[in-house]
Image (cartoon, rainbow, N blue to C red; front, side, top):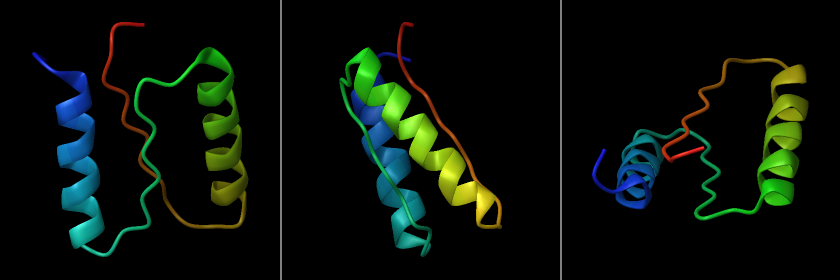
Length: 58
């Protein structure tokens, strides 16, 4: 991937246009990523199916 931020934006846009609920985090800190993953897990616990996409170096 040449540009993870652009990849994340493109995928977010495409999924949003298909009607999916999308949360996008760009250049997040460790704490922000931890909170986003925690919140994602809480949403999944309510039922349904989820997709987690990570584009980056770490």
